Image 1 (cartoon, one colour):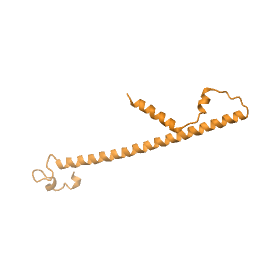
Image 2: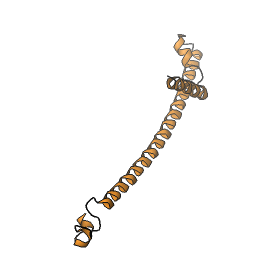
Image 3: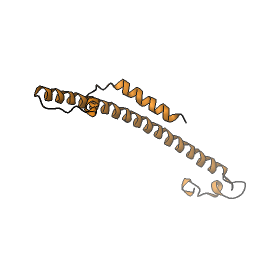
Image 4: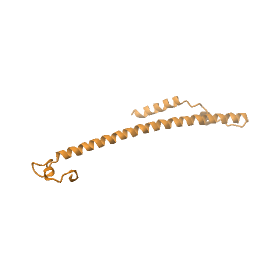
Length: 121
């Protein structure tokens, strides 16, 4: 505390004439307030980071859904080309499942249902 002007005995001196006598109540209060404001700033920045992370997750989901749609369309085109060229295309259950149209709303509803099931104990 000497850096704040405690060079004179009238400010930091001992006894009753001191500015902040021994239990240092004023100093404790100042340090406590500083800790409170620092904590508030950290919590606000964490909240901001959490919102940004949620936006990034939503964007990732949208990109993944778009990629799934594009891959499904490509599989449909390749299947149509194979039929046109009379290439023997083995019809298996996996290919039939992959050729189904992707509906993002249905997928999102299914994800929400799964999340709700996980939340219920």
